[in-house]
Amino acid sequence: MIQRPNIVLIALGIILTLSFVPVYAVDLNAELSSKGVPEKPTFRFVETAFVDYHNGGRLRDLLDHKNMTVSFQSDSSNPSIQDLIKRMNTNLSQELKGQTKVTDMSIQYTATIVGGDNSATIDYSLTLMPTIENYIISKNSDSTAIDASLIGLSIHGPVIIKTAKYGDVEINKLSSFLHMTVPDLNITDSQANQVLDYDMIDSSPIAKQPVSNWQHMFDPSYIITETSGWGYNGSKIPITTYTVGESSIGIVQNSVIQTADFTSDKNYEIQTVQHASSATIQIDGHASLQVIGNSIVFTTTPSGNDNPAPASGLSVQTIYAMAGFGAVIAVGIFIWSNKKMKDSIKRGADNSPPPTFLYEDRKHWADRFDGNTSNSEEQEVKKSPI
Image 1 (cartoon, rainbow, N blue to C red):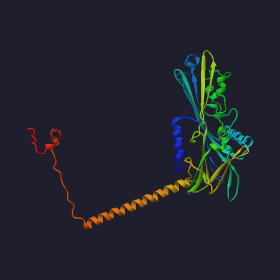
Image 2: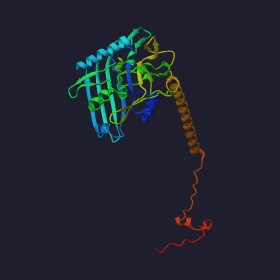
Image 3: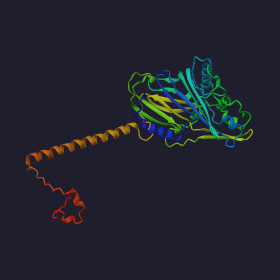
Image 4: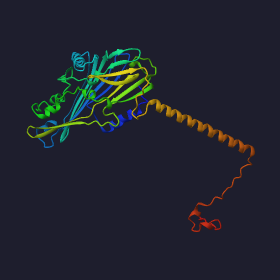
């Protein structure tokens, strides 16, 4: 398991966010190597929708106490996954003008609908794990330019995945899952269907973030047990971590809430909640983020003169120096205090007479209840005959 002891502030921001915000539109985690080794970023698309039928009606009859889950995994051995890979590469090259290529992929899909007395909740989760290659734009002895076009990856239109258990499943539209689980529900021509009919595979909100919204931290001695992901073999390497979105500290990201009414036998309401997208990108070396034209590029060097600031606003080297200086002072105080104590003990052993101890007569516990405490020693305590 990769350890990240020097990004506590970023991790704390993420933990605090997760305590209040349950889901994201897309959560991207990626590692990019200056050696160009194949990497496997993770895109997780999550959505929640609520169907309100508190007025009763036929929709309540269809959804009340309904509990259904569609869940499966698939990989590139499935021809429909191969078709999706081709569409992703088309998006990367033609729309995003990048050179990154997807060579393999696996997916995890889970969608659940749970109906209650007055409303139903739809939870949707799709995770894409592509293998990417050819993302190095240029490389020389001083720096490496890395294509980051995958940050804005998106697929438009239906995406049909063939499964053995459920048949053909459309994974790019939340409305398709609702039609699949409740075929008798007809909202095709309503505004509610438009609210549910957008493309789920869309990480373009991350790519649209200005460079100033990306927070970064440089760790000059990244301590990890395995560095094979970056093309290294167990050695310590410098790492730059970039984060944006819900995990960013001090930058407010607004959720998108859409609500639509539709009428069948009664008036109903559908609401979707799309929280701000987030991303965490790690690059070996001292990396900087640039936007060249419409392309996002990371430029990384083995080491650098300028120093990216961590979330606290201080460079990591400055924090290390302060911690080291404090440790030196603490050790000095300990040595001085220890020497003074030894000198005092030695002087006492050589010159001081044996210590005189004064003992105080122990009083009976019942004396505290005597009204005249000042003369307690002169009074006779009468004990109970028991």
